[in-house]
Length: 267
Figure 1: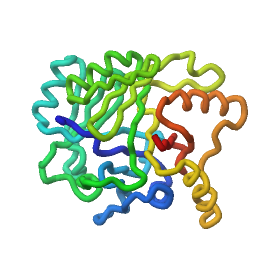
Figure 2 (figure 1 turned 180 degrees about the vertical axis):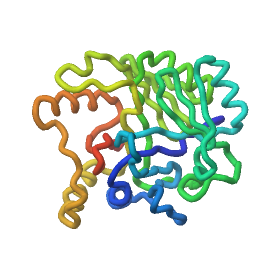
Figure 3 (figure 1 turned 45 degrees about the vertical axis):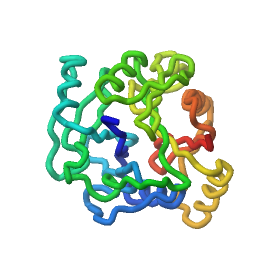
């Protein structure tokens, strides 16, 4: 496969304890080369999850995702060929998992790293043969035109377009992680605050949804800082949760400590 999804990033004031949450509930691994002043990355053996300190002027929440490509030059050429208005910038050298940042037709940001460049480290370079019992198995983007976005990610990055459509959504795969492109519509926001097209949420494959439910309660008993954000409270909360549940993959819905949407599935 020309490209693989290799990381997600969360901007948060609680970056250290949020990383602990993913370790405690989903068994993610911590980095062997931590950079505590910059970020706390964890990983599932395939995907790195970078908890980044929220900087001035930045919003908190799910920030961007990253792709590892076979050839950086070819990826950049394909982006420009697909649409000349799509742009990219080179990133500082201190970010080994992101040589460039670019955007798709909906201005959704993603990072690019070149495979076998020798720059990826730790949880951003792991590639285990056998997966753990809990691992990231899908990411969801809310886009204005799912068909066009599917064409972009399949043409530029070679992601496989899957046959299992769900409504107006398109599903692609890098061979392990599913990318779900769901339609962004203004009428999704009746009864709650509108949000622009964005990386909406991500989800885990787990061995047992009920085990996750129980362990969430147990975590709070052990450490009260592990309380996640409530979902479906009040009329606006119900409206937001209803939109979240439009995802065809997730079976159980929750947040992390920052409020980032996560869902889990046994499927």
